[in-house]
Amino acid sequence: SQTIHQWPATLVQPVGSPLSLECTVEGTSNPNLYWYRQAAGRGLQLLFYSVGIGQISSEVPQNLSASRPQDRQFILSSKKLLLSDSGFYLCAWSRSTSGGNEQFFGPGTRLTVL
Amino acid sequence: AQSVAQPEDQVNVAEGNPLTVKCTYSVSGNPYLFWYVQYPNRGLQFLLKYITGDNLVKGSYGFEAEFNKSQTSFHLKKPSALVSDSALYFCAVRDGLGNTPLVFGKGTRLSVIA
Image 1 (tube, rainbow over the protein chains, first blue to last red):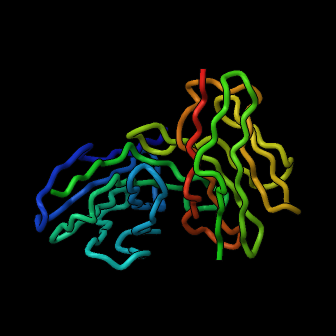
Image 2: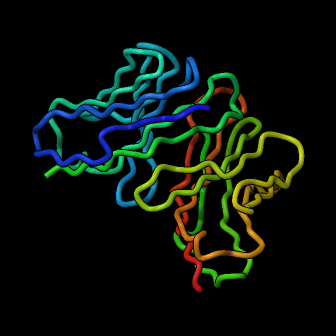
Protein backbone atom coordinates (compact mmCIF):
# COMPACT_ATOMS: atom_id res chain seq x y z
CA SER A 1 0.00 0.00 0.00
CA GLN A 2 0.99 3.60 -0.46
CA THR A 3 1.89 5.99 2.33
CA ILE A 4 2.83 9.64 2.42
CA HIS A 5 5.04 11.22 5.06
CA GLN A 6 5.63 14.82 6.01
CA TRP A 7 8.09 16.28 8.45
CA PRO A 8 8.38 17.98 10.67
CA ALA A 9 4.88 17.82 12.12
CA THR A 10 5.20 21.22 13.75
CA LEU A 11 7.69 24.03 13.32
CA VAL A 12 8.18 27.42 14.94
CA GLN A 13 10.53 29.73 13.09
CA PRO A 14 11.54 33.39 13.41
CA VAL A 15 10.84 35.86 10.63
CA GLY A 16 13.68 35.92 8.12
CA SER A 17 14.85 32.36 8.79
CA PRO A 18 15.01 29.68 6.09
CA LEU A 19 12.50 26.87 5.68
CA SER A 20 12.65 23.31 4.44
CA LEU A 21 9.64 20.99 4.58
CA GLU A 22 9.91 17.49 3.24
CA CYS A 23 7.37 15.12 1.79
CA THR A 24 7.99 11.55 0.70
CA VAL A 25 5.71 8.93 -0.83
CA GLU A 26 6.16 5.18 -0.52
CA GLY A 27 4.66 2.32 -2.48
CA THR A 28 4.16 3.98 -5.86
CA SER A 29 6.25 5.34 -8.71
CA ASN A 30 6.05 8.48 -10.83
CA PRO A 31 3.35 10.12 -8.73
CA ASN A 32 2.06 13.62 -9.25
CA LEU A 33 3.00 15.64 -6.16
CA TYR A 34 1.39 18.75 -4.68
CA TRP A 35 2.00 21.34 -1.98
CA TYR A 36 -0.97 23.17 -0.45
CA ARG A 37 -1.23 25.76 2.29
CA GLN A 38 -4.26 26.07 4.55
CA ALA A 39 -4.79 29.17 6.64
CA ALA A 40 -6.97 29.26 9.75
CA GLY A 41 -8.56 25.85 9.13
CA ARG A 42 -10.29 26.92 5.96
CA GLY A 43 -9.65 26.71 2.25
CA LEU A 44 -6.70 25.14 0.49
CA GLN A 45 -4.31 27.17 -1.60
CA LEU A 46 -2.35 25.20 -4.19
CA LEU A 47 1.27 26.33 -4.08
CA PHE A 48 3.18 23.95 -6.37
CA TYR A 49 2.69 20.71 -8.23
CA SER A 50 5.02 18.37 -10.03
CA VAL A 51 4.42 15.71 -12.65
CA GLY A 52 8.02 14.43 -12.66
CA ILE A 53 11.55 14.85 -11.34
CA GLY A 54 12.71 18.43 -11.79
CA GLN A 55 9.32 19.52 -13.16
CA ILE A 56 7.68 22.13 -10.93
CA SER A 57 4.63 24.26 -11.67
CA SER A 58 4.11 27.30 -9.46
CA GLU A 59 0.57 28.42 -8.86
CA VAL A 60 1.16 31.46 -6.67
CA PRO A 61 4.14 33.85 -6.90
CA GLN A 62 5.66 34.24 -3.44
CA ASN A 63 8.81 33.73 -1.47
CA LEU A 64 8.41 29.95 -1.44
CA SER A 65 9.98 27.46 -3.83
CA ALA A 66 9.67 23.73 -4.42
CA SER A 67 12.00 21.05 -5.66
CA ARG A 68 11.67 17.40 -6.59
CA PRO A 69 15.14 15.86 -6.38
CA GLN A 70 13.87 12.28 -6.47
CA ASP A 71 10.79 10.59 -7.90
CA ARG A 72 8.98 10.34 -4.58
CA GLN A 73 10.41 13.32 -2.72
CA PHE A 74 8.99 16.83 -2.75
CA ILE A 75 10.56 19.69 -0.81
CA LEU A 76 9.12 23.11 0.01
CA SER A 77 11.65 25.82 0.81
CA SER A 78 12.07 29.45 1.60
CA LYS A 79 15.18 31.56 2.01
CA LYS A 80 13.50 34.09 4.32
CA LEU A 81 10.20 33.43 6.06
CA LEU A 82 7.51 36.08 6.40
CA LEU A 83 4.82 36.27 9.07
CA SER A 84 2.28 35.55 6.35
CA ASP A 85 3.91 32.18 5.69
CA SER A 86 2.35 30.79 8.85
CA GLY A 87 -0.17 28.06 8.17
CA PHE A 88 -0.80 24.37 7.77
CA TYR A 89 1.16 22.90 4.88
CA LEU A 90 -0.17 19.80 3.20
CA CYS A 91 1.56 17.55 0.71
CA ALA A 92 -0.46 15.27 -1.55
CA TRP A 93 0.11 12.74 -4.29
CA SER A 94 -1.95 11.19 -7.06
CA ARG A 95 -1.43 8.63 -9.75
CA SER A 96 -0.64 10.27 -13.03
CA THR A 97 -2.67 7.99 -15.29
CA SER A 98 -6.13 9.55 -15.25
CA GLY A 99 -8.06 12.67 -14.36
CA GLY A 100 -10.29 10.51 -12.19
CA ASN A 101 -7.51 9.71 -9.73
CA GLU A 102 -8.00 11.13 -6.27
CA GLN A 103 -5.28 12.94 -4.37
CA PHE A 104 -4.00 11.44 -1.13
CA PHE A 105 -2.88 13.84 1.55
CA GLY A 106 -0.15 13.67 4.14
CA PRO A 107 -0.63 14.52 7.82
CA GLY A 108 0.53 18.11 7.36
CA THR A 109 3.09 20.46 8.93
CA ARG A 110 1.95 23.26 11.21
CA LEU A 111 4.28 26.25 10.63
CA THR A 112 4.26 29.24 12.94
CA VAL A 113 6.41 32.21 12.00
CA LEU A 114 7.08 34.60 14.89
CA ALA B 1 -11.61 27.28 -16.00
CA GLN B 2 -12.70 24.86 -13.32
CA SER B 3 -14.38 26.03 -10.13
CA VAL B 4 -16.26 24.68 -7.16
CA ALA B 5 -18.69 26.46 -4.87
CA GLN B 6 -19.68 25.36 -1.39
CA PRO B 7 -22.37 27.90 -0.54
CA GLU B 8 -22.53 27.15 3.20
CA ASP B 9 -19.69 27.97 5.57
CA GLN B 10 -21.40 26.07 8.38
CA VAL B 11 -24.02 23.34 8.58
CA ASN B 12 -25.57 22.32 11.88
CA VAL B 13 -27.57 19.13 12.25
CA ALA B 14 -28.90 17.10 15.16
CA GLU B 15 -27.49 13.66 15.73
CA GLY B 16 -29.59 11.03 13.98
CA ASN B 17 -30.98 13.46 11.42
CA PRO B 18 -30.02 13.34 7.75
CA LEU B 19 -27.31 15.72 6.62
CA THR B 20 -26.54 17.42 3.32
CA VAL B 21 -23.46 19.43 2.42
CA LYS B 22 -23.88 21.29 -0.84
CA CYS B 23 -21.48 21.61 -3.76
CA THR B 24 -21.85 23.03 -7.24
CA TYR B 25 -19.21 23.01 -9.94
CA SER B 26 -18.22 24.53 -13.25
CA VAL B 27 -16.01 22.83 -15.83
CA SER B 28 -15.59 23.00 -19.57
CA GLY B 29 -15.47 19.25 -20.10
CA ASN B 30 -16.73 16.21 -18.24
CA PRO B 31 -16.19 16.57 -14.50
CA TYR B 32 -14.46 14.31 -12.06
CA LEU B 33 -15.88 15.16 -8.62
CA PHE B 34 -14.54 14.38 -5.17
CA TRP B 35 -15.40 14.79 -1.50
CA TYR B 36 -12.87 14.96 1.32
CA VAL B 37 -13.15 15.30 5.09
CA GLN B 38 -10.66 16.98 7.42
CA TYR B 39 -10.50 16.58 11.18
CA PRO B 40 -8.64 19.19 13.27
CA ASN B 41 -4.90 19.33 12.64
CA ARG B 42 -5.07 16.41 10.22
CA GLY B 43 -4.66 15.96 6.49
CA LEU B 44 -7.63 15.56 4.18
CA GLN B 45 -9.19 12.12 3.90
CA PHE B 46 -10.79 10.97 0.68
CA LEU B 47 -14.49 10.05 1.04
CA LEU B 48 -15.80 9.35 -2.45
CA LYS B 49 -15.66 10.33 -6.09
CA TYR B 50 -17.75 10.47 -9.22
CA ILE B 51 -16.14 9.55 -12.52
CA THR B 52 -18.93 8.18 -14.66
CA GLY B 53 -21.92 5.88 -14.47
CA ASP B 54 -24.42 5.76 -11.62
CA ASN B 55 -25.27 9.23 -10.38
CA LEU B 56 -25.41 8.06 -6.75
CA VAL B 57 -21.97 7.35 -5.40
CA LYS B 58 -21.38 5.61 -2.08
CA GLY B 59 -18.26 6.20 -0.05
CA SER B 60 -16.63 5.80 3.32
CA TYR B 61 -18.33 6.09 6.73
CA GLY B 62 -21.85 5.83 5.27
CA PHE B 63 -21.57 8.95 3.13
CA GLU B 64 -22.97 9.19 -0.36
CA ALA B 65 -23.19 11.88 -3.01
CA GLU B 66 -25.50 12.50 -5.91
CA PHE B 67 -24.24 13.80 -9.21
CA ASN B 68 -26.74 16.04 -10.98
CA LYS B 69 -25.53 17.17 -14.37
CA SER B 70 -28.41 19.52 -15.13
CA GLN B 71 -27.93 21.38 -11.84
CA THR B 72 -24.11 20.98 -11.92
CA SER B 73 -24.24 19.78 -8.34
CA PHE B 74 -22.61 17.05 -6.29
CA HIS B 75 -24.14 17.24 -2.80
CA LEU B 76 -22.81 15.07 0.01
CA LYS B 77 -25.38 13.22 2.08
CA LYS B 78 -25.73 10.86 4.99
CA PRO B 79 -29.01 9.37 6.21
CA SER B 80 -28.21 9.62 9.92
CA ALA B 81 -25.56 11.98 11.26
CA LEU B 82 -23.16 11.09 14.07
CA VAL B 83 -21.40 13.48 16.43
CA SER B 84 -18.15 12.04 15.10
CA ASP B 85 -19.05 13.35 11.62
CA SER B 86 -18.33 16.87 12.85
CA ALA B 87 -15.46 18.09 10.67
CA LEU B 88 -14.55 20.27 7.70
CA TYR B 89 -15.73 18.96 4.33
CA PHE B 90 -14.26 19.83 0.97
CA CYS B 91 -15.67 19.32 -2.49
CA ALA B 92 -13.23 19.21 -5.40
CA VAL B 93 -13.37 18.98 -9.18
CA ARG B 94 -11.03 18.14 -12.00
CA ASP B 95 -11.83 18.83 -15.61
CA GLY B 96 -12.00 15.55 -17.50
CA LEU B 97 -9.87 17.01 -20.26
CA GLY B 98 -6.60 16.56 -18.42
CA ASN B 99 -4.70 15.27 -15.44
CA THR B 100 -4.30 18.48 -13.45
CA PRO B 101 -4.54 19.38 -9.76
CA LEU B 102 -7.90 19.18 -8.10
CA VAL B 103 -9.68 22.48 -7.59
CA PHE B 104 -11.13 22.64 -4.08
CA GLY B 105 -14.06 24.51 -2.64
CA LYS B 106 -13.52 26.67 0.43
CA GLY B 107 -14.93 24.04 2.73
CA THR B 108 -18.04 23.58 4.85
CA ARG B 109 -17.84 23.05 8.57
CA LEU B 110 -20.32 20.43 9.76
CA SER B 111 -21.39 20.37 13.38
CA VAL B 112 -23.48 17.46 14.58
CA ILE B 113 -25.15 18.23 17.87
CA ALA B 114 -26.02 15.49 20.33
